[in-house]
Amino acid sequence: MNENITKRNTLLAQKVMKGLQSRNMSAYYAEDREEARKMALSLIPEGSTVTMGGGMSVHEIGLVEALKDGAYNFIDRDTAEDRQEAMLQAYRADVFLSSTNAITEDGVLVNIDGNANRVSAIAQGPKKVIFIVGMNKVCSDVDGAMKRARNVAAPINAQRFGLSTPCAKTGSCMNCKSPDTICCQFLITRYSMHKDRIHVILVNDTLGF
Ligand code: SF4
Image (cartoon, rainbow, N blue to C red; front, side, top):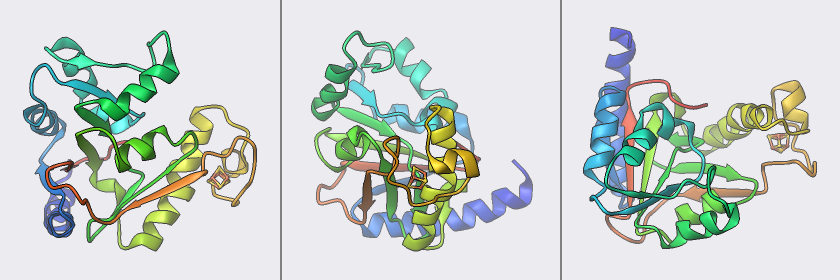
């Protein structure tokens, strides 16, 4: 990572972490992907049941491979015989892993979902939720975070899954009601009622989209 970008990320991360802590969430800053993976693993006791709802960032730091290779009960919905049951198991899991579509400088997390399995598990169910968040996801405020979610994350996800949405064709949100829309549910996480449930690891890198 470029030295000047690192300097900016380190300063900005202090602000984001302060915001997260004021919202009853735990916050960490990793200098690189390897440190982020080690931090995440330090929050997951061996023997834990772990699952996730998508999240390129989680894959990109090598966390999924580490969990599969380690002494954890990792539920992989992508290879599960019963995908629906695997998604339901997330609500009873010890740990749920996720990236976020955007985060504000003062620590509000913004996520959109089509199927809603991800946003519903973030909101309620698993005992612990760990977010892996590249500094490219930081936006100035909730309005900026919503715009990022709808104009950056959603079009790329729509293209990735081969969906027939206007944003997949134009690259930006057209506020559609397409049957393929992935913008069915919006979750704004502004406070965690339960201390030590939500942990956010900010990473000095570009992760996900
Ligand atoms: S509302 Fe429709 S066009 Fe806008 S980002 Fe979502 S899926 Fe794409």
